[in-house]
Length: 93
Image 1 (cartoon, rainbow, N blue to C red):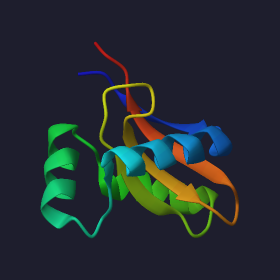
Image 2: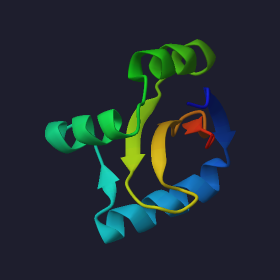
Image 3: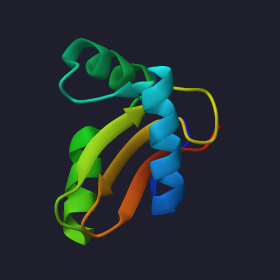
């Protein structure tokens, strides 16, 4: 299995992708516990590691998942105040 990495993406493009995900019902928030846990498990996300890493770089990061099969599908941590977005990426083997 490929080693995961954390990548910073363009905040403004992310905001557009997130809006499209909301409009199409593909946004998953932490409050949707069952759906959230299932997605995280299926995609092998190490939430504690990701959150710890992100908190060391930026303050006030919020997690969100875009559940779609395109370049913007994935697990994100973002901050409106700092206008930053990080994503968890696992390259294919």
